[in-house]
Image (cartoon, rainbow, N blue to C red):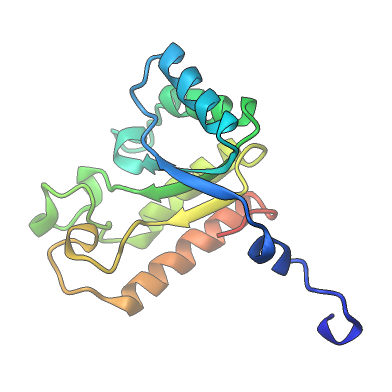
Length: 173
C-alpha cells in the first residue's frame, strides 16, 4: 500500500504513458483493416477504442451477427493492440416510441441492454478486457429525447458493469 511505498495495482495504468486512438473499423475490407491496424501498431499506439453498436450486432431479438466484430477483435489482437469496447446503440424494439429513429437512445429497460452485454462479454471474454458502457450519455442524441438523467445513467452503468464482470471477472469497466 501507499504507506509501505508500494502503489496499488490500479495506479499502474494511471502512470502508464501509452496512447490510444478512437477508431471506426467496421465495414473496412480485410486488407484495409490490416493496413490501418499495422499503421496504428507502427505508430506505437496501444489502445484502440472501438464502438460496438448493439443495433448492428443484434438486428433481431436474440439473433446476433458477430462476423464483422469477430474480424475487428481478432485483427486488433493480432497487432498487439488493446481494445476498449464501447457498447452502445440500441435496436428499434427496445427504444421508447419518442426515440424510434434514434439508435443512440438507450433502451427503455436496462435489463435488455444487460442481456446484450452478457452475450458480448461472454463471446469476447478471452480477448477484451476494457469496456466503456454507453457513449456520451450526457448529451441529448446519446440519451434520447428525454432530459439528461445522471441517476438513470448510473443505473444503466451498474447493469452493464455487473453483466460484464459476471461474464469476465478480469474486465475493467
